Image 1: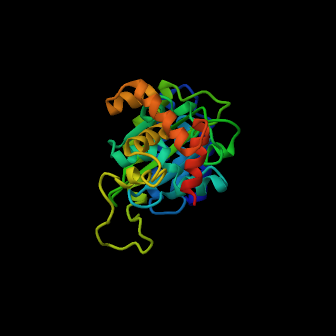
Image 2: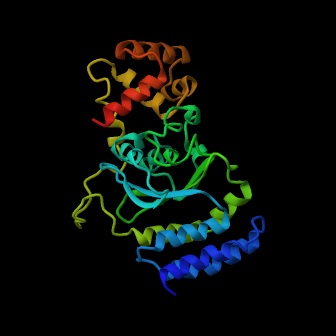
Image 3: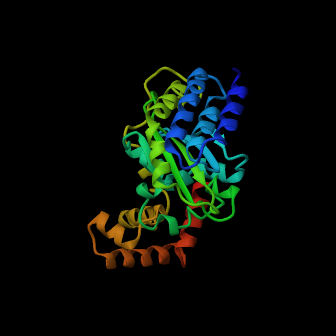
Length: 292
């Protein structure tokens, strides 16, 4: 069966799977898994995997990024159409605010995650999550997403990838049963992603030498050092980093071991030194800085 025929068969059969019948969904997945294994190393494999996952729990958008620690993210699968300028902004620096990106830098264990379980406490009320200018998936829809979940996978190249599944804002989040179905097939999804992108390297020449990036993703912390340099103290730069990533004053105080009032005083000082009036202006200034 050709790759396109496999993809069409998966899509067609998915319509016959009762949405709330997990046994039928898993049975259909078993059939789809044969097509997935047959298309390893073929260009259409990610799309076939995507279609097979949708038969377990329907969703609207999908994409995959690989996150080398000392290099920009690599856009390895496009299930969102034409993201435009937002994708460029994301790759150039906005990814530093993405919980999946930071989780990959921390080397969380491979698995399926809800973004809300990885995100800071104020993340979903923050500017990044609701900004069409820097979020390549939100730019395709009006408003924010209903939910984003993702398979985080360690690649043979030594860094991690995230295969994200997203529901648009007019849908409900993934239910516990749907998440359980997608989690049940995680071992095959993980090995498929590892196998498909096993040769991936951050260097354009694809050399065989040992990668020259850090194991802990220290570049993600250093990326904030130039923002406000010469104006902000080291502690204030740390506060900025936490604010932009979506931490509340309470969360920042807890993480840094200082009083919540001290955090608020630091924020007032930061805004004054940078000539800003709000967190929204701080976000805009940081994105402008990253895209220079």
